[in-house]
Image 1 (cartoon, rainbow, N blue to C red):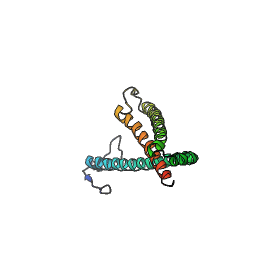
Image 2 (cartoon, rainbow, N blue to C red):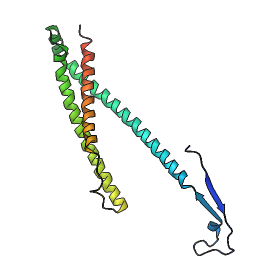
Image 3 (tube, helix red, strand yellow):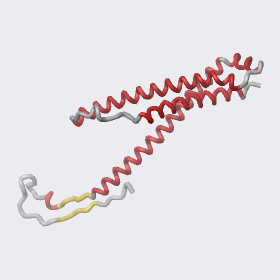
Length: 178
């Protein structure tokens, strides 16, 4: 576990006189030998905690985005409620009524995914430059942002959120129409 500590302390005999770097000889007296495995275990536990927190935060952001997009589309549907009621009364199918909102949700999803990619790229560039300055290394060209499949996946998630929110909002409205 993370709180489990086992360090080894070795006591050795010390000559009576110290050295130039250690005039009192105290550092030679007690040598603290920390197990490298303990350090690696704690670091891995910390990385696991960071991964879990990142996953939870990502999930919360997905739900927040779904909530915001659903309510935004709901406002658009509510604004056009008279038109939708007339369409329903004259016999329009549910698909015919829902299709424009799904297309709008798709376009909003693509726009949101592209904006997310632009923001991610900007943060990546900023962090690479900061890392380059901090470590005095020329690594700006070596660090790739994300694989292409992940970038397409981010846009696909945006499209899925947009379409899903549009479907939920329109279906919620259509259930209220007699």
